[in-house]
Image (cartoon, rainbow, N blue to C red; front, side, top):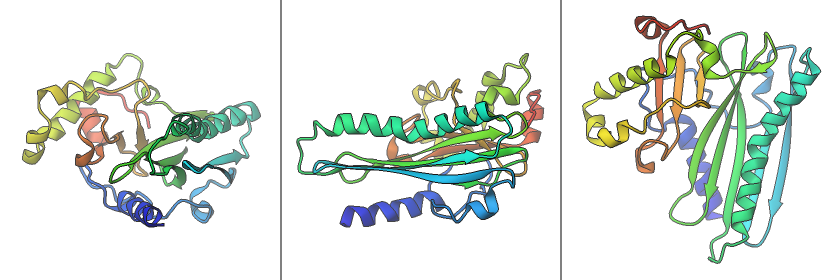
Length: 251
């Protein structure tokens, strides 16, 4: 019971006030807790969202995942593919977690909780945010975020490279913008030394989302670049900033 209370408090903290290295603070992030009530305002009229839940329990572990199943897209094959991706996020975590939890020899009960919200984003996109919490002993668990953006114009999942022209060296340009943001912060210089800069790379499956005003936000979870105690890293790249490095940003 104590750990469940701690988890709820942690969710509240990370959804509202977790450390952030964004160029400017994001006020658009929803403060609603995961669930279905938010869909009334956040879901475009042609889309319907039904929450799916899957719970597994054992004396050594507890796993609870939820994910959205969407309907209403014109392309039913694309709809099926997108739903498979949304489902796969939680089920993949669950399978890996259960496999590892079976070897739990400690007196501590392992926990996996994966929840989601639908957040406001730039039209014609549809943004699903997954919040995952993994506890495998110790003083606290490990939270993480994963963002999935749907392009409602062509019923596909949006990837970062689709936002830029094929000719643009967007990875290098984006990385240079991230480094500039970090170097503006005196306190960050002590934390982000040369060896950590080397790990700050734009990945093929880079975690990102788009704000309602069109700004691009790149996201790095705990332990991806810096120690878990430092918190999440988010970098907000405005359209003006992207124009300055000659990136053809097509949000």
